[in-house]
Image (tube, rainbow, N blue to C red):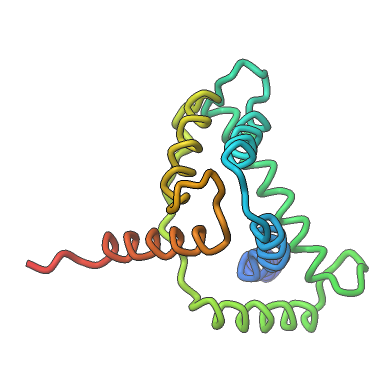
Length: 178
């Protein structure tokens, strides 16, 4: 009995070890396509507002902590199903050792390309967000990205902003020299 429990726990841990396989392949392509063309401020802000509105289950203009947690749990379930489907190469409903090893090796190669680091997670699940707040924050973010002030964010401007954010995170993560 202990052996079955240990093997079951190992299987769960193994599945967790290959976390992100399907999402890591789909999201970069979607993001690249979304930013291939310049984006006007109205489109940028509307995308941000639409993301918040999708979380607002009762359509009251406010995303509560419970609504946010429910959305996070739904996404987590979708990601786990996608990961399982990705690992189950022959679609037989189970993951063989060979399928697991292949998925694990693929993930290791990708992590090596990205540096393998994990970003520090900021838990915002308890914060209430209004649609108006989301709109204002998106407008502010757009203005910061639109370096030349022409009302359009190009791929180059976005890359520059991303580099600035990385530098800021690195500065915060570096221990303060005293």
